[in-house]
Length: 89
Image 1 (cartoon, rainbow, N blue to C red):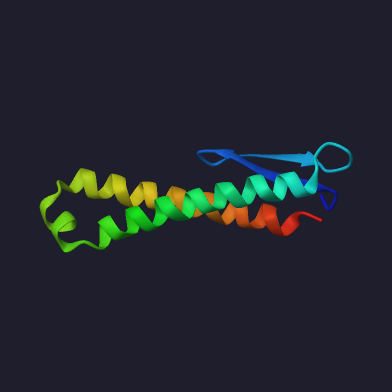
Image 2: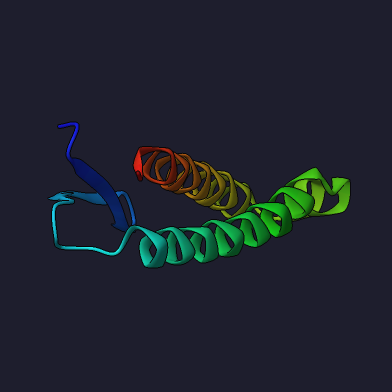
């Protein structure tokens, strides 16, 4: 809905709440920006690990697969946070 905001809670869980009178857009923007920055740090760290030839070559396949899945989840969360930021008035 046009008058609601999508909140990313955790692990792919999202909620839509009406904006009218429930949240302060400035505080929500700060909260989402902080969450976005935290996600970007984690994404950068995990991406670096996955781009390291030593990690990919030496780590067991399940460990590498888990890291790839975590990276995909973090990127999905970051995308949802970005959409929530863009939806704020």
